[in-house]
Image (cartoon, rainbow, N blue to C red):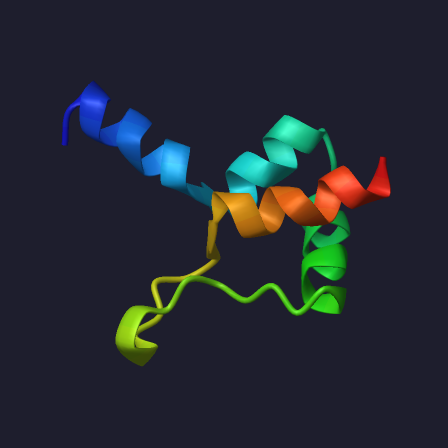
Length: 66
């Protein structure tokens, strides 16, 4: 995976860690609003890969809060 691949991934997806870092909030503080807004981790065809979210869905939650 090269830098272009990583950039492409992060343009479409956000991990709980990157959201936490970007928002300067603890992971649990980030997770609670996502849960409340029913934003679930990305799970194509029911297959889960951990706390990876579609960036647009996750960021929409935090844009509403500001």
